[in-house]
Image 1 (spheres, one colour):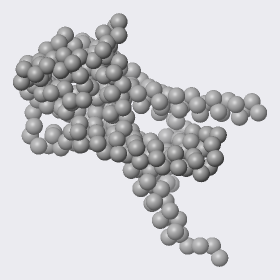
Image 2: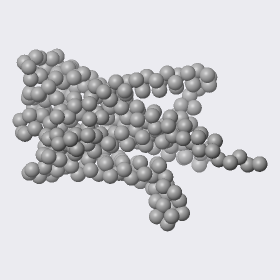
Image 3: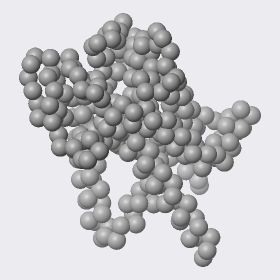
Length: 285
């Protein structure tokens, strides 16, 4: 009985860690969600939590990696996604440190790395969604199936929730220009010189921490700044620390929905593939 309780605590601890990763990761996609300082320190914290997440699953990582190296096991799609996510997160960390504005790690002439910082940031969010989708069955068993609701009601609510998240994520994939981040480094697009804001969707249309003028409208977020055409927008309410709570919540909802979009697509395709594979297996006589 005690072992079961300990196992449940570990499971819930991992789920809470995953939730913290989701919240922090989503907030990183606007450098002014709270402040530039928060963006950069939060990025370091995110990488730390990511390493803790991997350390908690070290036995699985070690066994699968050893099997692949010794050619005793085939490439595991979850393992491949994890490796790509590790590479992507490492690239985000390195490029972020080199172009930092508040940490003493920036180097001169590293501004050109900004567009790669955005590329790997977008890749990390997409890969995180794919990673989540590949573990969809596990999450369903540990969370959704534990709801004390009739099975019919639970299934109906699940379908409605997935449809809402899919539509919400699809909308923000288009309106944020998220997908374009994967092609910009290869399309000869560069970052503007100092004084202008980098050409990176909504995040880069926000002012710097001390105020300033953006070169485009701050879509979806209210802020009392000029948008380049002399138009002023209403500043969102802030608490005593100067943090725009509504702004942070909206940013979290936007990028969490994009992550969920990738998770839903992955879960559906992976489930379909498993059924197709099982159907092709020869039936035992």
